Length: 476
Image (cartoon, rainbow, N blue to C red; front, side, top):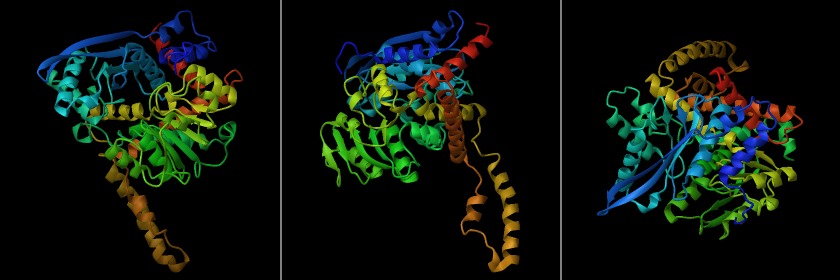
């Protein structure tokens, strides 16, 4: 992707925001207030490693404070830069508004290749980066709450939370300064899988709407649908696993750094994940065809394409060759604004990133609430639910005895019905409800307005409208 005419990631976000704003009646100055990034902090800090001082560059951008705290992940990657972080922070603003998570948008990044450092070195670097942000309240449970992103995970979030608590020893809400922590360090069940699970729930809701499915030239349910997944990291892996194991979809192609593999009968996602962990790539995976040119896999015949890696992988040079009638953006910004125009002209339906990958921030919200309430979800009501259900089961058992062979309970009904909802069940229920509600808000605009021809514009209209309402309530 080398043409000067191709917009940058930040430009793509701005183009898409402007398209939506052109269809809105916003007061003078409101559009600019919503569009601009409020502040970006750049930090350059040194850490003594391997006998010398190494200097690192990091960022934390705050796009909008229409609600506080602001929320957004921290990524560790060599490509991190101010424009990227500010674009991601803007996406977080609209994403949180769309799914009604009560946050403004933020994002952070550290220019580093995690693979180049030992674990203890990475901990030193992470703690120092956290220190620089914490002392400026750019990590704080009531002001700015990070989460994992590309190159970070539970481990890094636990280090950041511990660093915050070392610096704020009397803050009882300290664990809420960051989400995506391990469960045994104040995390929440279901957070690791949340973004991939959200992709699954988004597709399930899409396929519950026959009129929307028909717009993509598809029919029926997810069962049997051919899926291509680009990137088998945390998000791509969980989305592929759940869709294949629970919905009957066939993941026929997976694209990774070293190429792509294909099996028209469907790939074993868990086995493939283990293979990548052992060998570092997909090459040589048994019972699958291998091709060294990974990006070509985006152009394969399939029903659903899931880009779950980096931004800008579908661009002006390959958009015309994309054959998937339905794309769901599990990554942030995988389709450039130019490619978006090409795909729309072809009739491709795109479920946009700001909705599709909102599962992570939704469950992060649940974790933040859990940390502030200081109690595990389900702890107060689970056994009460089971006791109440037991009354019905006992009554049905009595009827079972009275009626004999004329009627009997389904064998596993009793055990399923008696089980009260624990934290994981409640998290999944809340995520499913959030994804369904947000989809309907977005799809209603898409269906109702003649001047809205795609789901992305509809999503921006809903999100920007909610942000504008928040600013109006503040008196702006």
